[in-house]
Length: 456
Image 1 (tube, helix red, strand yellow):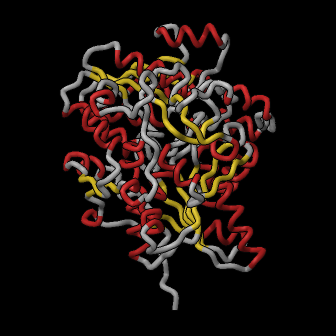
Image 2 (cartoon, helix red, strand yellow):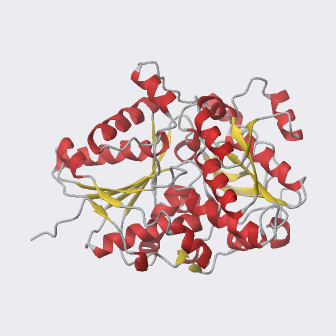
Image 3 (cartoon, rainbow, N blue to C red):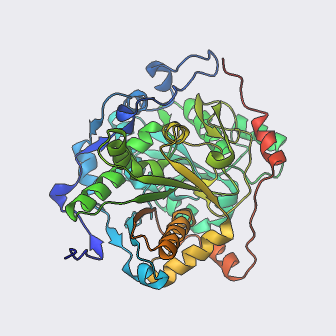
């Protein structure tokens, strides 16, 4: 007789992970190294430490240690909102009439409303340990900026946030949460930095991009003594911190004998997807189990499905190291769609390498289809999902409906990265029937590819 699975599976406090998992240690082919854009050589710890906190720079370069201890102070902070629930979507299964079993890992049970707090508290901790005055960052939809503002407030650090201009205008309440926690929030591109002024001159009237905001945040950090730059996605150190999501998910699955067949996550820079799949991917890499991994990205910013695997600048202003990744080109300015956190031109080097090796699939979905899935999920499961998360919901529903057609009883796990209560402008446009889809043409993408640097 099948064991009855609770609607929500929680781990006990004693079962919470004490270490982060570094999937790079189990990868036979490691991600290509970051390159110094001036010398073309792999960046050194000393060079990275001029931008990031030294301990975070060490984590960024660490390809060998599978497990890294979570400092006790961070563990204690995690206990304020972790473990997050692994939820069985019984109502959704019934509504779809599918034999599939659907689970989702919900990361919205904290004030920031998303998974971003998992890494922001770690990065703020290391900044405080180093004796810094403050940190700078960028944010797209605002979840990362909110999480970092909260973490900096906790540790008494100054926080300067450059928010992508279209999100700054579309999501004023997210902006005000950041300010409530003490952050200074600037719409990007701005005239407060040299690189911002340059971008405004080259792209007058631009709605901005994460690449633009990164450039401004880095310039701000290196030009102010006692500051370092921190990032909410893309970097290997961020995927490391976010592995807490997958570690908890795997422990909860093991506790009840659940074996996911398909694991799905939304993909922008890679923090949520990488965090969710990393421990499961480790099992696959070690030959212990097999899973189907699906990365879901917006059709308006299709870095995996239509990008090139090449070295590229991580930012539009071309001040950051070069990373080998699936990219649309650092000069690509995506349309101002509402999944602001997925509007990055590239993808994590770790995830890019796994995708390049065929260990992971990728799909792109259009915005109206995403919001249709979000509305369906909200009405059935009772949680209003973030637009970013809803990309994963869209494909999870699609996979469950395939099971309905074939009669296969597959188990699906997806990441619900956060809530959508600050995204009501987007929901309003969908409900009013005025939301449109944008898919870049090959000509649009060619402009971004033309700016890829030549790397020998």
